[in-house]
Amino acid sequence: MYNQLKFAINDDTYYYLAFSDITEEEKNILIHKLPPSEQAKYMRFRQIADKEMFLCGRTILRNELENELHLNYNIELDFNEYQKPELNNFPYFNFNISHSNGIVLVAFSKFPVGADIEKVVTYDKTTIIQSLSNFAFHNEEIEFLEKLNETDAQYAFTKIWNIKESLIKAAGKGLSIDTKSFLLDCVHLNPINPNLLEIVNGMQELEQQNINYYTTLYSNNYFITISTLTPIPQG
Image (cartoon, rainbow, N blue to C red; front, top):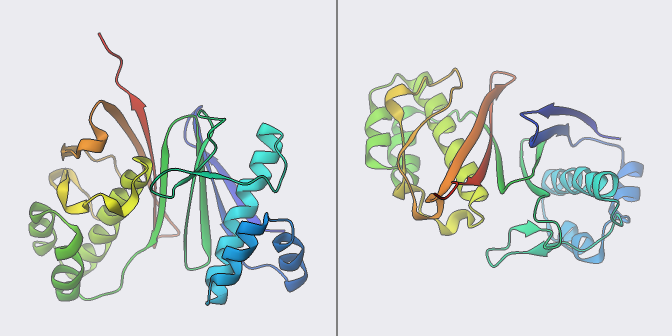
């Protein structure tokens, strides 16, 4: 039904990219396969695009649960105290969903995982610095953006936010974590070409964890980051 692509990052982590446009007939079939709680959530979305992306993400997730874990398609999900969906009985089967402009990202891993997809912003540099960065970025990240030309600032802002979003989702706490509280290594940040960044000032939620993340630029205007957390061996 959905046009989707599968990508393996390593032996432990992989993700799907899918496009949420399908026929009305296909939508009706998939909606009625969801558990009642997700059918209700689907109906609460006001925008058609949001409904379509939600349905697409849940369909990919549930197909994977059925195929890999042999669970009932309409099993109810568990949620942690920060409302991140999970499966309590399968701690080594983790997942996370994100979407942007009709493109849906669903990541799976043996470890806690956070996924984010963001379309490169088109705001002018002044708006990026004053209205966006000040509420979410560390002061040193803002200083880095101020030195760039407008195009590079658009890409760098999106990339930094994309990585931060995936990290707080991997930590399982989402936006309850202040994204200004940790700093990415902007010294080695190429605004457009993806590369691994070093977190030089970490957040408490990531202590005693190995942080692994994969960042790529899709179709030249979408940043994708998949982050996983693995325990640091003791002793």
